[in-house]
Image (cartoon, rainbow, N blue to C red; front, side, top):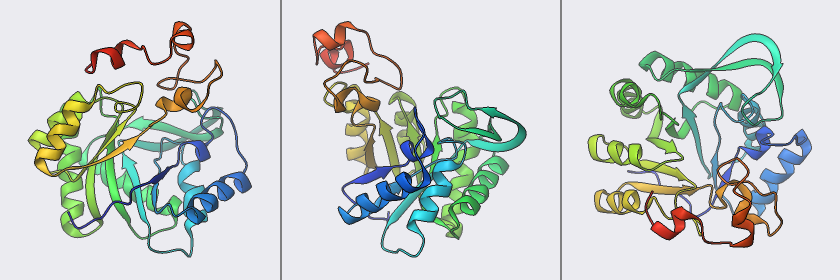
Length: 250
């Protein structure tokens, strides 16, 4: 893979109003602070705030160069009646998600993302959360991304998920460049180690995302989330003793 991944990255879900709203200025300031700290890897997705994260990130990166940008495919956004989001983002919009891992859906998703980002291309495109669409993602989404890589539309392709077993299939059965593994290799949960070992053996790069398990490891106050939901209360009285951490595998 010709794409070099920086050591640290900026995850774009919070500037898509994950859990709570942030203003356009706060979103810009967050990207600016990351940039000033030397961060040069930026990740986003249509899922994050129903396009809000992509629009804000594209605006904040406008005029800059020398960074790596990734976005994702698998959810296309379609117009409908305005409504509050029901998947964790504090937004109200007329855009709604539709799962689509078809070849045409992949191209449409990426085209729409480029419009929202205001860019002609991205460095990395990831198949996003195909948990319930594994076979279509392998048979249709992956070949479509491979073709886009061959055409030079994207420099690298991969998969982004909150589990490790399906990414392991992709690593073994396809020619992806990158796996983004969210939450499965952290201080609290190392269940993704078998995937990391296979990636190391095959030369597939890994982006360890969700390293605070969506919040629990970033606070000592009860109320932090684990996997985007409240954790068992007992974890707050016995930190570090989650079943996943104790077993080492899920």
